[in-house]
Image (cartoon, rainbow, N blue to C red; front, top):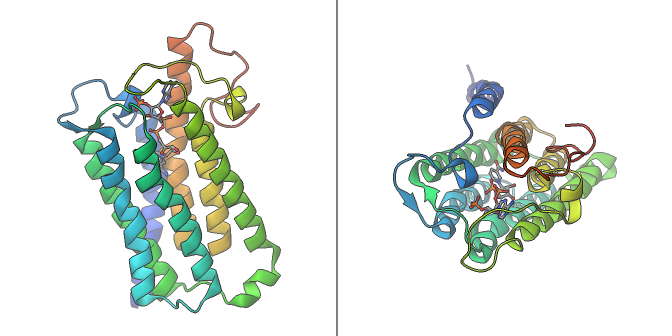
Amino acid sequence: MSEKDLFQGTLLAWIGLAPIIALVLLKIAAPYGRHGKGKVGPRIPARLGWFLMELPALVVFPVLAAIRGDLGSPVLILLLAMWVLHYGNRAVVYPWRLRAGSPMPVVILLSGMTFNVINGTFLGLGLSLFDSPRGLEWFADPRPWLGLALFLGGFAMNLNADAILRGLRKAGQGGYSIPRAGFYRFVSCPNYLGEIVEWTGWAIVAWSLPGLAFAVWTVANLLPRALTHHQWYRRTFPDYPAQRKAILPFLL
Ligand SMILES: NC(=O)c1ccc[n+]([C@@H]2O[C@H](COP(=O)([O-])OP(=O)(O)OC[C@H]3O[C@@H](n4cnc5c(N)ncnc54)[C@H](OP(=O)(O)O)[C@@H]3O)[C@@H](O)[C@H]2O)c1
């Protein structure tokens, strides 16, 4: 078996694990934020937790791509630029701007870091060694442009949704209220919807198995959590807007 076959077999197994984890997450919500109030061991401040958890994502894929990849490839450069745009926000700007997020359980920090290292490694090795991005001619095809548009649209939706949630709390205060602005008129979790649209777009630009794996895992993490958040909102607020869906406007 060649190294490439081994890599692709491992990556397929990783993709196969995603729906199983999604089913588990439907039953047991990842214990952080509003779903992390029970006994989940030690916690660290939310800002530090988000920074440490997302740092490996910001670093691992770009470093592997820089060491092993063809940095003359405009497609790889575009993928890296999109990546750093998202994870520069998630690892640095998002934690810095957080108002009063619930302290993060260390178990969530460690599992998030592990997840980010695994995905960054698959992407870094995949997109630099085994499944290099296409050449400049790829831009003559509509797919990378569609992917880029989805990525930017999803990023904007995610940023806007995160900002609306931030605006619901005064500095230093906790507690939850019903978000009513922007895409929250349609769904309970436009932050997750935006993130899923983003990584679907990124996977279309990459058009490769590692990119698909990352998009699949994003859905596996965020779709169950959106459904759980939605049920929580309905249970918690009797006046929760009845027509609002969990994550897909008018559908789900
Ligand atoms: N790619 C991935 O796999 C992945 C996984 C997880 C998260 N993310 C992204 O990371 C970001 C944060 O995710 P998250 O799961 O922490 O989102 P979240 O549960 O919606 O919470 C985001 C922040 O807003 C606060 N908040 C949420 N709902 C609120 C309400 N109704 N009233 C007042 N404050 C509220 C939360 O406080 P508390 O902390 O106190 O609840 C937290 O500080 C999102 O943009 C998400 O897309 C990505």
